[in-house]
Amino acid sequence: MLRSLAILLVGVALGGIVAAAAPEKSADSVLKPLQDYIGQWKGVGQPKRGSSSGGWIEEAEWRWDFENKKLAALVFAAPKGKHLVEGRITAVDGPSETGTLKLALAGITADGGTVAYSGLLDPAAGSLTFTAEEAPEIAPHRITIRFAAEKKRLVALLERRGPTPDSYLRLAEVGYTRTGSGFGEGKFEPECIVTGGVGTMPFQYKGKTYYVCCTGCRDLFDSDPDTYIAEYEAKLKKAGIK
Image (tube, rainbow, N blue to C red; front, side, top):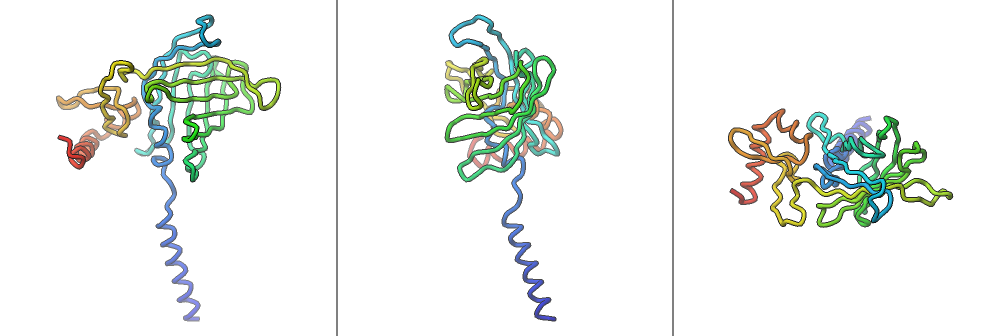
């Protein structure tokens, strides 16, 4: 009996070690690869490439949605968009060995409808792709997003399903330029005090200028500014930056 109890205790101890060695991935680590999408973007939409017919201009904001100071989701809003005007992206699973990441997108269309997408971030292909089994007429069945110009430009291709299940037809394409990036001007890009991403939104606190990458980070900073400043200054000191 004593031997059995000893074996049981060893098993429990080993189980604890295994659990400690392989903790569940937090939302921070899972969604962090999406940091480059964060920010304010100015976009031009075109149903037909190279033609302004039926085109439009929109502005989009991609920001972090925090829950208990953890990254819960990535959300975007494009109020003047012709197809999707809002979306909330969450992780379905942690990244694979190749770095791909399974995602879900809950979208809201320009006419107030909803559409659900499954997504995949593929670092090898350099793209973020979402597909929907069913979508209202105003919405795309597939969305493919890629960066250009050292991530100062963002191109979103919107497609409807074609006559066969595996075929797609162009609905529109939206080309965005990151606001405040100094695209084509060679400007220095400051760092977000909360996430370390590209800081495009300056603000003043106690007479000093700081930057955040989105309104979500600004709200999180406002909840405990002195802590975030202390962490940021410690980071700069460790890097030897005064």
